[in-house]
Image (cartoon, rainbow, N blue to C red; front, side):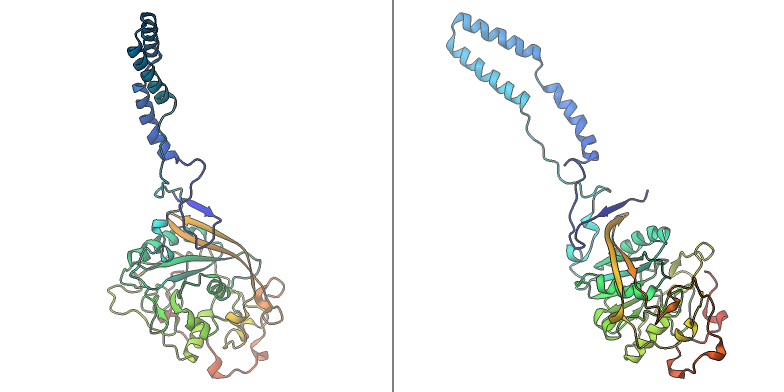
Length: 385
C-alpha cells in the first residue's frame, strides 16, 4: 500500500513526528498484553482484607513491634498498586506513518563520504501514477550509491500550457542552498543500471540519459531525460529559455546555450546495457498525449536561439509548499503558478488562436541560430511513446 504523509515543517527540518498520543498504535498493541499479564501479579482485595484482619488482631493483642511492621507492609502495597512506575515509549521512527529521518540524505549526515548534495528537480503536472513509482525508485537507487539528495516536484497548477523549462528554473531558484548541483529529471524515466552514477559533475554537465541509452531519443545533440549540472554552470548560461510552452525543443535550446558557453557535455560509457534496458520508460502516450499544438508565431520563434529569457527573467508565484513521504522517500512539492508575457509568448494559451504563421510570412533566420536538429526519425527516434 502506498503511504503518503504530508508535512508542514520547514523544508530542512528533519525530525520524527508523533501523531496523537506519545505511544503509537503499534506500540500500544504490544504494551496491552504485558499490562494485562502484570495485573495478575497485583495483590487482590481479599489479601488486603486478610492483612487488615491480622493488623486488627495485633492491635487487640497490643503487640507494638508486629503492629509497626504491619503498617509499613500495608503502605508499600498501597503505593505499589495505585502508583505504578511510568513507562516512557520512544518515538517509533521506523513506523511507516512517521517521517523516517534515517532514509533522508544531505543535512542528516547519512552519507558523510559524499561531499556534495543534489537537488533532484522534477517538472510536473498530472502525473500522479508516475510519481508514485518514480519517487521510491529513485530514492532507493541514489541511497544505494550513497548520494546525498532531495527530491523537488515542481507542480504547475495554473491554467497555462505546460512549461518544463520554466519549472526547472523555478526548481533551481527554490531548492536548498546546500544543494550544489541539480538533476533535471523526467518523472517517467527510471534508471535501471546501477552503473549510472549521479556524481557531482566536476568536469561539466553530465548527461545520464545519453542518446545511446535513452529508450526513445538517440540523436547526438539530445540532452533530455536526465542531466546533471553544477549550480554555477546553470547560472552561467542563465538557465533555460522561458519561451517553450507546450511540448518539445527546450532541451535543444539549452544545448545551444551550453555550447555557446564552451561547456562540454559528458556522458556515461562502458555500460553493458543499451537503449532497451538501461532505463524504464513509464510514459503511455495513449493515456497522456503530448501538447504539440503550435499557434501564433510559436513555430517560427521556438526554432531559434533565445537570448531574451532565462533564469533571470522567470516570473512565477509559489502557491504552497508541501512536504510528503512516498513509501519512505522524502519529497518537497512546490505548487507553482507561472506568469506569461502574452506580448512575448502569446502561445502560452492557444485556446483562442490555434493557427500558426504561414511559412511564406516567416522572417529569414540565421543558420547559426536555428536549434531544430535535422533528424532521420527511423534512426534517431524510437516510436515507443
